[in-house]
Amino acid sequence: MISDKMQKELNEQVNKEFYSAYMYLAMSAYCNTIGLPGFAHWMRLQYEEENMHVTRMYDYILNQGGEIHLKAIEEPPTEYGTPIEVFEQTLEHEQFITKSIHKLMSLAVQETDYATQTFLQWYVTEQVEEEANVNDILLPLRMVGEDKSGLMLIDQQLSGRAVPTPPPEN
Ligand code: FEO
Image (cartoon, rainbow, N blue to C red):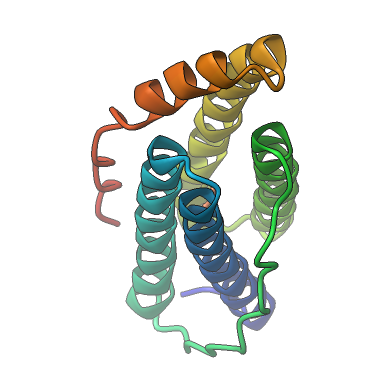
């Protein structure tokens, strides 16, 4: 069982993860329109990964006898600027999500809610990986800048991103 406050905050996080999925789908479409299919592929898989983050959290709330409150998902932008700006916004967003997960963990600690702490630990670790993955792409992107052949090479690399592994069951 989880507290009413925890239930509310987990539902808020479900909404943020839904927004993440929505934003990455919008970014995928944008990358397609600017002629970067590899970037679009990476973002499309990120969209799928975020959906898994959503359903894992949704299942946990239900498993704990909680109620699901699905709220309206904010509309993401349709344009994201240069390829570097696309990934800068990705990093910024993931840092926002990391902070949000940490706030949830603080609440679970404060409430001595051991089950939710264990559940959230996976997200804490996942956020380290998410930020590292984006930084690993931003580094070469900043090196090539606006150089077209450099961008094409990175696009080719991003087209090789593998389908994400589903998270562990609760
Ligand atoms: Fe679900 Fe990218 O954080």
